[in-house]
Image (cartoon, rainbow, N blue to C red; front, side, top):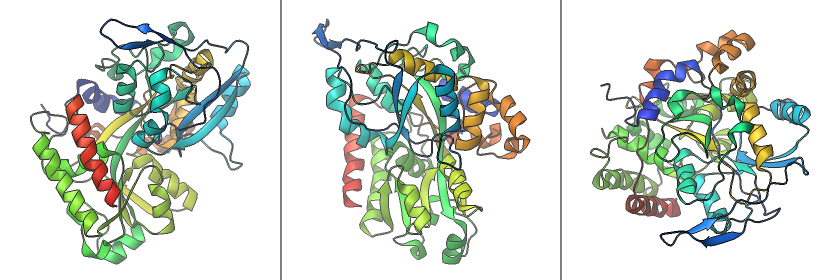
Length: 410
């Protein structure tokens, strides 16, 4: 077995199949102010856990929808409009309020967890948390089950995404985009500071010439994951990724925060530091860099996977239990699972698309897309990626607490 492939069977197959579809931007769902009707609490279910009741769906009488997402995660034209979303609204007669109000999974969850626990409206009918957070919501009973009749295009879901332990048949979550994390850097500034063309290993981020100009993601699984991989830890293997191994990586990151080498630990807003020059190199997401270059008008920034490999994950559509526009949300998901629409989206966001047929449609739109490894990675490219393994409750608490303590010091 290739030890560089993710241990998780689903992600292993996603890696192998990624050639057939990729592309898209990884940002995450957004916060939002509470609106609409709240779901009521039902009687306690067996085992003492409160079972939540889905909000009444008013989609038939109220053709509106609120979608909270990460920034740089949808196609945008020169007028600041979203072409695919405009098309969806025109074809379905549904008015969509699109919000880019999600910076990272933990901060968003912190804003909405109380409403989620009560089955109340969180101010969004559909959101896109990363798979590990989607798993938490599903396991806690915080999301609604899809009506398969409203999702005929679900047949286009890449089979590799089926079989997830938290949602085997994808009845409560649908992948929106796949995500790669690695090194992003300002090409000119990095070379001027270090004399090198690009970073290749974690140690390159610790070059004294970069002190105070290094950024890392507030997403624990990406930042700590890359450091662990650099230390030879297989992050998808429980026998390799132990508590001791994790804390060793935490010690490294903590020391670099304490001595000022790492100046910023941020969620999606890390890109602003790259743009304004405060950060020269950062642990970052691939799709963002392609879009930042498009905005700059030239290839200002580079993105590479470390020699030890990058992390891979996915953001997923979910419908919170308190969402009152479920059918409208399902229509939106179905729209983006059409291969053509998925291809248009992928061509802009440059993340891995989970939609079968999107690659072929993208080739029709722009054959050059097939040459970009960050959009349509080869199997060799993706074999350098690993998925952070699932954590049990105790690990989740201790690992997150350790990383949060570092974040507070940044």
